[in-house]
Amino acid sequence: MASKRLAFNVNQVLRNRAALKAVQPVKRGFASPVSLPSRAQSTTLSNGLTIATEYSPWAQTSTVGVWIDAGSRAETDETNGTAHFLEHLAFKGTNKRSKHQLELEIENMGGHLNAYTSRENTVYYAKSFNADIPKTVDILSDILQNSKLEPSAIERERDVILREQEEVDKQLEEVVFDHLHATAFQNQPLGRTILGPKENIQSIKRDNLVDYIKTNYTADRMVLVGTGGVTHEQLVKLAEQHFGKLPSQPPSSFASALAAEQKRRPEFIGSEVRIRDDTIPTANIALAVEGVSWKDDDYFTALVTQAVVGNWDRAMGNSPYLGSKLSTFVGHHNLANSFMSFSTSYSDTGLWGIYLVSENKTALDDLVHFTLREWSRLSSNVTEAEVERAKAQLKASILLSLDGTTAVAEDIGRQIITTGRRLSAEDVERAVGQVTEKDVMDFAQRKLWDQDVAVSAVGSIEGLLDYQRIRNDMSRNAS
Image (cartoon, rainbow, N blue to C red; front, side, top):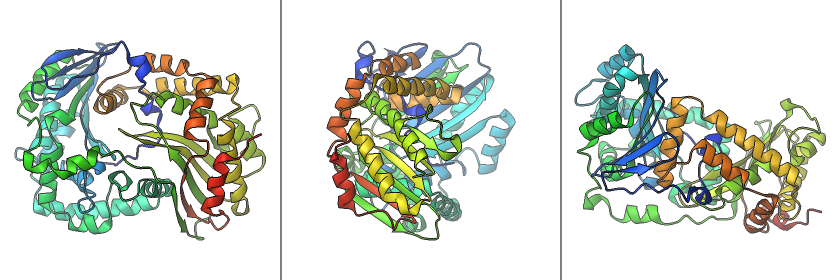
């Protein structure tokens, strides 16, 4: 049961208002079918639960999952880590099934059951043969509505999560991005980690877990998704049978100030966090400006702009005919081991930036300087050729990312839970194709040029110059 950070991922290439004019959004609260593109269908039950499917008549297996519009962002400072803790306990037994019975039932089906938590979502899903779909839905319903949350299981799971935290702390990219969120969204829910601080993991009580379920595991915040050999009619009937009694909204006593806090748009703060550790052989640096939300008109433009900057790894070689202008320059001057541009979106904000890794400790100033000079160039001098290259890579990534029923289920669940609608791969491809070099330059002028920047740096970072120098480079002439 792994937690996931929503950094740029090709599976996220999903939304654009401009391409959605012909697609009606899902309206919750009415038991009526909703028009979605391609083979996708959607229905919303009277209690607010949305069922979305994409049927493939030739598929021998299906993926069925529940996407919940709640993650670590739906917590408080005191309960940070609860959503992820719940994810672990979901497989430890219910009122109908013991932990052993649950495991045995899944194994006998030849199925696969998993879950993950992000900052804004919690997901439980299973893959099985088509004949086992009714049993799969029953199991998902059972673990979501009837988990025992036994005190003994809670105590055992504390150590498991603490060990998981230790493993995450060894993954420098995860550490850097957690610190990036913490500094960019200081003292705000989006700035907290998914696993939560150690002291919370050691002190979370059963009441905290029960309260989180009552507050967030409600029908209006859930989407039941089915892909593969499951038909829409079949999944709707199963949803009515197993999820029809889910409450439409939390009890009034649970919907108080926390709900208002969740709806408050995060404030991006230009700032930095540095953790110098000379025992780490590399400098690991993330730079980011405030990005775009899932629903932003600039969503696809942000992705294309990020693709223009590109990704690079020394192992890929230094051919001048491959990659972006930045990769050619960085490779030629041996400034970094690798870099990865990203565009991370949330419901109402995002982070757009780059993650740099370098063992050339005396060239960190040059690395950051020329990276930000490349960002500045995007405001005034972007060629049609490099935009077309970026768009082609993005389109290929989209199609490659939708291989298999689980990937398609993720695509549908994430889109509907975050935007209330679903774009097909063809719609996304069309939206990406409409982005021009003028759009990229306009985006860079508004979102990058002379904007505050958040900096997260870990490792051998003595050579990274002060924040004001970095901030000044956000408006340096790139010519």
